[in-house]
Length: 381
Length: 257
Image (tube, rainbow over all chains, first blue to last red; front, side, top):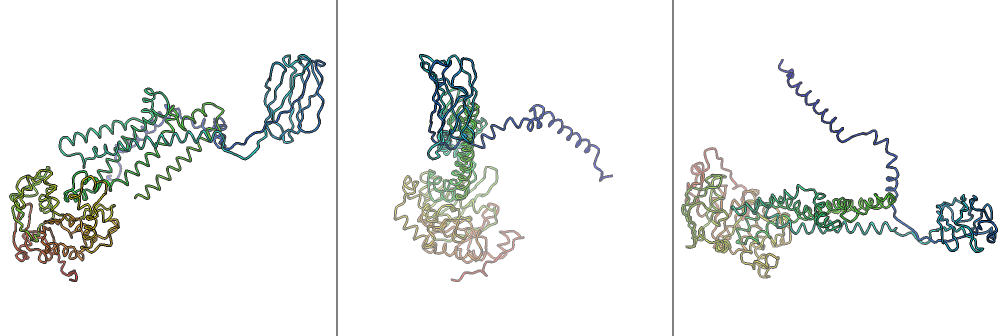
């Protein structure tokens, strides 16, 4: 009898499980969770993901060569072109045409698998760009063209059809995207570095005020201690992103409000971590130095500082690491740096390869910072 | 001469650590304080250099009133009172040299010392102090790289830097292997022979007999005995430490002279 679980316990457990199911069910409705769509709509992400996987990294100089063929409209308005049959050359299915006729343009012995730009070069008017085409493996292409009124000959001079081919020449070199990404990345890294270092400079003295073992003596000390701690906790409750938005209202978009936001939040966060490091020190050496007749500053410099330096340095590097990640996000909302570059490229719809470059750069830098901070902290231990 | 009169300490929590303790220490004495853990030995020693503020009572040293000293005077008084701790209280990450030099802070220029700039005379003094306790070769080691016995010797060298006239030793051998107790206490004895007054709290009765010139005993914050070490026999020991106390002997570990 005693070994059987009570009916109330069973009822309570059942109720708790039921409540759990209801909560999860409701929250998945609120957040519109739909795992089927996750797979069904996968093709939509394909172009973005494939672009990210093939970042825009290198480029080569392009040499443009232009070939042309005269095409009188209507026939007899100008001399027909002299046919060329060797080297890169163009032919037309008819030597001339009347307005609104259709004819075929063919190109031979151009650079293979290349994109070519085609245009009408019309006397006195200028050039009229036609759609791009691509050559096949033999450097050949065909294209249907209309003999348009605008391309009619004037004063016994025919319009020309011109074709530009661009051939990569010279060595591979970093693409424009790489240069832009590097520049934006420097902005981000220095945004994080500047905000972290200024925050550290402010947080160090504040952390002593917020350390109970240093400050919490007498009514004045206790007041200062609680004020500093409340300040830290208040600031820490704001996300850097919220803070950046506030500063952006104030100062406009750009790296400055982002840096400022990071600085304020990091000060509070580091201040709190530092003060805990100060509170965790061994009080023995403090006592020993007080006993020697050392003054307050000497005591702190000789007994507190050596004990906290490793923690302070590792927390600072850790925050630099975090801040690089956060400043990427802040950049997304207009804070400048790599995040801004990334959001611009993604929103432009044609810059996916450049976005890929940026994403890989972020991955590389975050990984490097992670490694660096772990290494330094290991050495300091 | 150090005179303690009616010393009482009540901690903020209400614990009364010392009750109306009075005694005198003449220059050149090796005074040992015995008593159970929590009997008030550490509080008593810390009241003498005012690491702990006495609640009531008066401590005078050569007619200077320590208890009434201003913060500035107190720093000057503390310079001449060295202190050695049970847990050594070294800055573990700092070098032995820095730890020893820090004993000189009361004399050094406050601003230069904070920047780590020391007179070469102070550096020489530190090396001499380390040589005196037999670890002159350890100056550049990190403090936590040393064994417990060596760390306590660094603690003594740090106290020596103060050119102390009194050394307060708060259970200097309680954290050490009994084998090392004599080696540490012999250094204190040597200081004592050089004219430095030593106030030392100890647990082992045979150590008390071996080193003390005079003994006081505390029980629950009250001075229950004051006299010569020879006067503390088994019966007296049980009286001070309670009936359940078992005397542990360290004699068998007597270090070679």
